[in-house]
Amino acid sequence: MNPQDLAARLSDLARDLQAKDDVDETLQGIVDAAVHTVPGAGYAGLSVVRGRDTMSTPIASADLVHEVDRAQIDFAQGPCMDALYDKHTVSLPDMGAEQRWPLFAARAVELGIGSMLSFQLYVTGNDLGALNLYAHEIGAFTPESERVGLLFAAHAAVAMADAQHAAHLALALDTRDLIGQAKGILMERYKLSPDQAFALLVRASQHTNTKLAQIADNLARTGHLPGP
Image 1 (cartoon, rainbow, N blue to C red):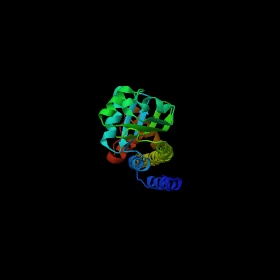
Image 2: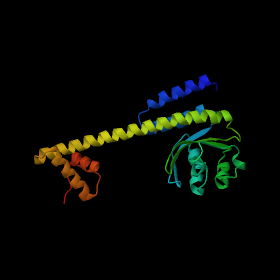
Image 3: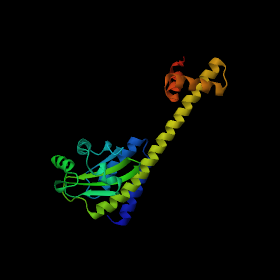
C-alpha cells in the first residue's frame, strides 16, 4: 500500500468512526476496518486488560477471536498479559514455534491460527488496551503490516478516546437532567428552594447507599423518595 493510498484510507477511517452513534459501533468499526486495512490480517479484536491479570475482548470481527483471546485468559499468558505494557508492537510470526507464551501459542495453533500481530492502544497504570490481529497463515504479517498497523492503531486509539469521552459527556448530561427533574418535583411538592431540594436528594442517597442519579431517576419515574 503506497503512502497516498494509506493516507486516504486512514482519512476515510477517521470520518467513518466519527459518524458512529455510540462506543460499541465505534469499536466494531475499528476491528472491521483493521481487517481490511492491515496487510495479512484475517481477524481482529480489541482487548482490555485490567490490573495486568483480568482480560476481556468486548469487540471482535469473528467468534474465533474470542476463542483465541480466551487462551490468554485461561493460561494467564500472551502478549496482552505482559509484553504490550512495554512495547507498542508485538509480533508472533510463527505460532507453532512461539516460545515466549507456549501454552497460549499451542491453543492458538489448535484453533487454526498461524500468526498474530498486537498493537498497544493505551496504557493507564496497570490497565491496557490492545488491538490484536490474527491470520491462519504462518508469517502473514510483514514489516509493512507493522508500519500500517502502527498508524492504524494510533487512529483507533484517538477514535476510542473520542467515543468514550462523548459517552461520558452524554451520561453526565443525562444525569444532570435527571437531577434537575427530581429537584423540580421536590420543590413543587414541598415548596423548597433548589438548594434544599438537592440536599434532600443527597440525604436520601446517603441514607440508602444509592447513587444520586438512581435516586433522581426513581423519583422522576415513580414519584417516590426513600427516606429514614
